[in-house]
Amino acid sequence: MSAEVPAWLSSALKSAPKHAARLTIATLADERSFGRGGFSLSSPAFEHGEELDPCFTADEEDAVAPPLEWNAPPPGAQEIVILVEDADAGGDTPTCHWTVWGLPGQKGMLLEGETPPRVGKNSQRNSEWQLPAPPMDDDAHIYVFQIFALDLPMVLMPGASRAELVKAMEGHVVAAAVLTGTYKREEGDDDLADNWDEDDDG
Image (tube, rainbow, N blue to C red):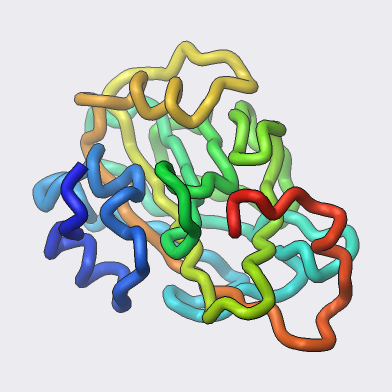
């Protein structure tokens, strides 16, 4: 994959994450499908580009995934897929925090901590929201919530890998959008994140 971030994506991210070119949306979407028909993703818990509350991260006990909302995709959409990746973590592939599918191709939402219809494996190889836990000395990491409207229903079973999901989506994205949240661990934060595998730096 080229290291160059598409102009349409760079503008949407409002920043220059280290590894934005490796995000799933950089390869599956394009200028035509991005934001097509006004398709967008938002959260009542944070604005685009704002910091994530610790209650969604490894620094707070009983943390859960944030709530998300999206408007109606273009006609022809049959399924909604959501992926969350760390645009600043190292590694050959993006650190994947969440893969969700099985959502109807229409306006919808996920409540805070809600269990989606189908969830795949994250970078820690479990099927749940991988709590953000960037290294203490790092600058704030940018977590990119990516939403895709597909022209066909996914047949993948829960527990599929990110690679399997991405392969199944290729050539079927009719619209896409992003929402970003940042997180930086501060000195004095609880050590709850020490219980999580941080091999992926995310």
